[in-house]
Image (tube, rainbow over all chains, first blue to last red; front, side, top):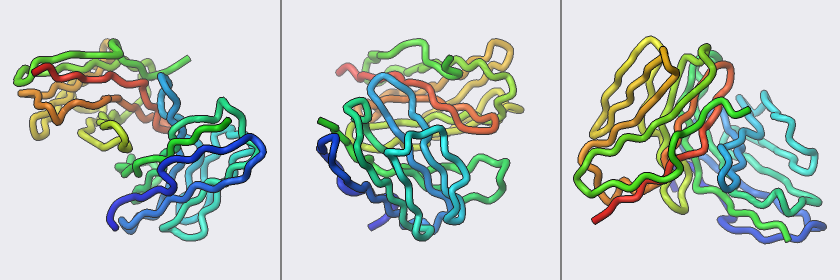
Amino acid sequence: ETGVTQTPRHLVMGMTNKKSLKCEQHLGHNAMYWYKQSAKKPLELMFVYSLEERVENNSVPSRFSPECPNSSHLFLHLHTLQPEDSALYLCASSQVVHPSSYNEQFFGPGTRLTVL
Amino acid sequence: GESVGLHLPTLSVQEGDNSIINCAYSNSASDYFIWYKQESGKGPQFIIDIRSNMDKRQGQRVTVLLNKTVKHLSLQIAATQPGDSAVYFCAERDDKIIFGKGTRLHILP
């Protein structure tokens, strides 16, 4: 596989369930990102990992828990979600060359999450 | 409030015509701007970028214009094709990337 892959592509879960979203990048990048994309709203950055360390957490509720075991894999653990958490969750990766420079992000296809 | 936004939620263009998608931003400190294309069922895809010290940049069939005086960014697509159907959104960077909502481009046969 090439690029950024995400599994599952679709997920339906109840508010009491625990599930995990998986992202894998095959680009040799050293930074990975989780975004939330809701209908009629801009992309919202949730978490950023650079060199496997979390460098950004944009006031995301604790019911979302990220994990980055290595530079190629990123997880988003979900528990006790709310219906308003239903959205497309996008993973992206980039090569961080310099902290102040923008590094093109390559996005995965996303996981469409529905919380009942 | 939202820092980056687009003027129109939907744009319909005849196949073969040129498309112009607009974006307004409010942060004059932003130094980098990016256009993304998102097709149905896919993640956003980088199209073209421009730094704040430039006012125009061209790619293959696409041109980005930056007017810092009025804080306006536009994406021009030449000879629009059916494959250009997608949602296009801009993003700006100051200390972080902020994305706009998006404009859906419809191609009319």
